Structure formats: C-alpha cells, structure tokens
Length: 233
Image: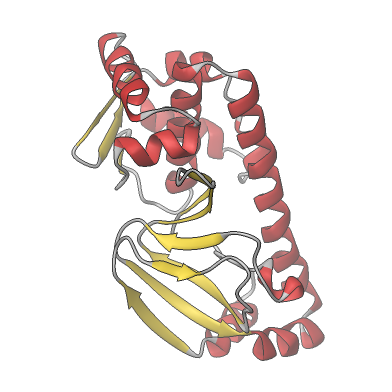
C-alpha cells in the first residue's frame, strides 16, 4: 500500500470508537452502512444455533476489516461481537465508493482482503471436518500466532488470546470439557501452554505437525513463515 493509499484510507475514517468486551456490534440481518477496521483488541464473527449454542466462524485480529463483505452485500448473515475491549475505525460505505472509484490499486487490495477471509473460512472448514480435537486446537493456535506475528503482536512465541475455554470450544467445535482436556494434553506433550489469556508455543514443529498446519492459505509475505518459525524456536 502506497503512502497515498494509506492517506486515503485514513481520510475515509469517520470516527474511532472504543467498544467494551463481550458486546454485540452488528446483529445478523442488520443493514450496514459502514465497515469496521479493527485497530486493537479481538473480535469475532459468529452464528447462534436454536439450542442457544454459538459457533465462531471467524476470529478478527488488529488490522482486519471485520465486515468489509458487508459493503457490497449491505447486510450480514451472522453476528459480529467483541471478545476483548476493542478500538475500531468506522468507514462509511459512501467513502469506500469514492476510494474504489479513484484508486484501482487500493480497490484490488480491499478485494484481496475479502479473498483472504474466504481462504480462512476454507481452512476452518478443513479443521472442523478432518482434524481431531487436539489437531483443531493446535491448528487454531498456530493460525492465530501467524496472523498476530504478521502485525507485530507476538514475542518469543507468546501472544495474548483473550478467549475462554468456551470460546475456544465454539471456534473448534468442542465442549469446554473437551477443550480443557486438550489443552492439558498440549501442555503435557510440551507443545503449547494456554493460561490466563496468554498462549506460549513451546514446540512449534510438533504443534504444526499435529495441526497439519501449512500457512500458505494466509498468503504471508515471502519469508514470513521462516520468520515466524524462527521466533518460535
């Protein structure tokens, strides 16, 4: 993204808001007239079943457009909420219209953002459909580390993850009890430790092998995989 494109994106921001943790931001079926860029914190997209159980369908980290797909669709088929306190930039769709009209390369980058969302969704389908409990959690942890590492939010294999065991279960299709057992297994096997909102990956190679994890679907810059694995030791 060029300096001119960054300036245009910043100029399109109507306001910056701080949202409380555990807050519904957009309801399923709600008409949307703006898109939300996550600056800090953790958010999610999710769907509720009739029995009251929730399924997370996306985790949003700083730098993500949380609902850019709502720009052409004008409504969402799922809910959007915060997991931690979050700081977001609000960009009205009318201002996105102007950017897309005047800046074709920025248009391509925003389109790429929605395509990356689709790639993540495909990987989540694979994770839920083909991996066992330990593999699902391991894959989720590896993916989250690499996404956060790309925006300088990791250090020595550690990163903040403000999710409860119930949240992890809702992302991985597991009960809270199963998540607890799985985290204990990862810790006892020397692969990763998850405690008090912090993840520490202790054996990246072993965790990636268990997860059948290959980061190609994240389309990171050249060398980012090697950099991430070097950080993880």
